[in-house]
Image (cartoon, rainbow, N blue to C red; front, top):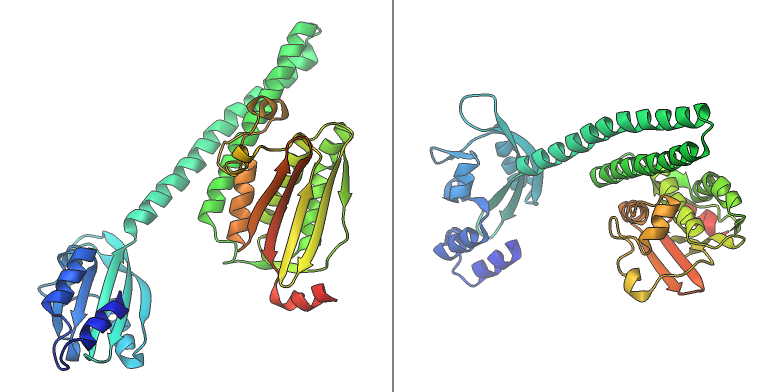
Length: 357
């Protein structure tokens, strides 16, 4: 937008104020909370929404934090951005969080300053986080009670029919427990940026840990997990999240494979990208379903998902994790042949050379 406004200036005569009627109308149409400061920080224009945000009072800019951003923009002649907290009014303790962007327009010796209210978005995020935390706590308590009760019935009763119902109850309790935990995991993934507190994660260790977690499930089905050679590279991110993503793919491959088959897990490097590939000999996924399998709660075979305890969130969680780490995930599948899921992640810079050796 700033480039477009600069082009408008070049079409005008030099020496004119940047805050022409045309520019003002453009800013009004865009609905931006904006201020134009001329030479000497003279206010040439401000929008009504800027007044509503409280950054303009009595036709003056208020707030030391705003003034500091403007000073820096004029001094460096470079775009400046900041997150600031402003009082909602001259009295009271209410505040709002604003993002501010200042662009110096050297041809006019002017500043174009725009503001955005981040308070509502943060409030909605906080409400969502609180809701998930509260509902997960409220659900975990009765789930634990039901688990204990079903186990007690199984131990105390000698009635085969009653034991059968207790066992069915246990299965559903475990499924509900898994669902609650995956909802929590998905919510946390949407909140967190794994690269803020990132570490270098050994991709081989993460994959091997995920395989170990799935080994017992594979053995109950007489499914062999074949592991390819290590690649010796690292990625930048969250180790726990990456293990969870690989675990979901391997567990999914086991759940949708016939007994006495194989699941292969391979890692390869191509340039600065590492690929983790999970291959099964399962029932396959139709083309129509392939475009939707990463959607929340979408299940190709609901009946089989209920049988295996699937919630329809595993692949969605995996996609979020991979996306958060700057990677992508794809699927190839053929009915009656099996499926291949491929995760691609950028290799950490200092480990690129190791992976090439």
